[in-house]
Length: 586
Image (cartoon, rainbow, N blue to C red):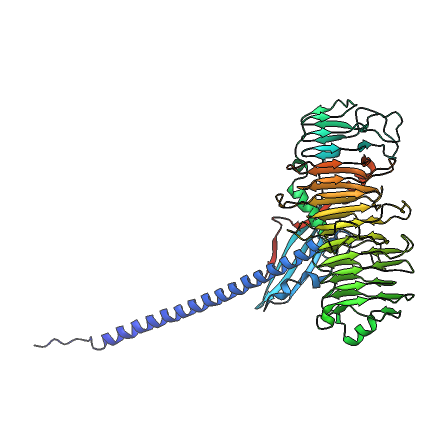
């Protein structure tokens, strides 16, 4: 007999239930995936916004590192702050703010008001409706270079030939007759060899009282004198003035890099250049920054005036892609100057001429020759100041030749009769590495010149890696504005890089040389020294300091103090580690 039941349709009900459950699960999964995708998109937008904000922050901080005017004045140069960030393709617009780190924070104070050398730089970016604000501290600090207190310091030997001498004077320049303990010392890492005229006393001191101590690691040869030297204890100059300090001084000298003139100013047309190169005498006032393009006269510019004529060119920024030649009674004034080739200045035959170039960058050689005719009759001046500022700007060139025989090896006087006056800011001369040619040459006659009409060089810092020569009667710096000459050479004795100082005039300041000896051979009248200040030499492979003739080094603490308070104070600016903060992201 067949059993009867009520199970018809049960499978269908189960199927419907399973389908409903799967639908619910599928809907839940879709919703979960949608939410996850949304969160991922939101997170990606937030991260991208943060990345853009950090990139903008790096650009802003770099601007403050290159321009520390914010130490004393409000900094609002968003164009400079956006320089690097603005080159990122597709990046959203960034806004910038610079403000002091005082308490409480006041974003309207756009400079270092509390004087601690730190300010916040802040950036804001928005990407896909996600806004990110980040900031970090930028700090500026001054570092004082550590140098040995010595009138003459050498890693190896000091040799005084002829009637040369090294001595010290009091702060006012009068002879130091106080005797021991001495104001400072002559230090030699190896031997000290003197001559019978070496007294270590000022030539103005009739008592011939020793004014400097003597400390030597090796032997002492002082014929006719007993200076009771201290033995040993002289290290290497680099123990005092280490690589970090050397690099800081080199960076200061290279402040003229990169170019400071405007490379995208108004192009000089053929018509305008025809006007500019006229020699009939004119006064030209530029309305805009100018560029001499390669398409016009191959980028070369010549500005001159005929005999008896005078021309004055008042440029703003001048960017010459080729070479620039200035001759005759021609005065050129610029706010900034760039020369892609050589810069040549000569002439001024019937009047004094002073060119003011502002910050100057010369890719090739800078050749400055004075006027022809009677020596000193007319003076040619070259300055990196401007008509609106007396503060000289930086100067950069491959080769610097002032009345030197540039057509040969730039090592000696070219025979011209011109006097000159140079007023330069921090100067870096790159040199022609590998050739052994002289990178820096200052030359003048030795006769027919006096201290009142001799050439003068005012430059707080002159640095190079190649040979330097000085010949003739030239004065460098002054007691109140001395200079620092820094020669950093490391050519492993592949060629001579000796500094030949045959100058008859007076150098006021410090001379610091590494891996390159100095020969001081200028003969004087016996009453004034060749160098007033100190000579510090770090050349462990050769005789460091060699003196001859009637040359002399005069240690004057006034000069040293003024050098230390100016050129050897180097400012370092950078981001404070660990100061990065993300203020908000929404």
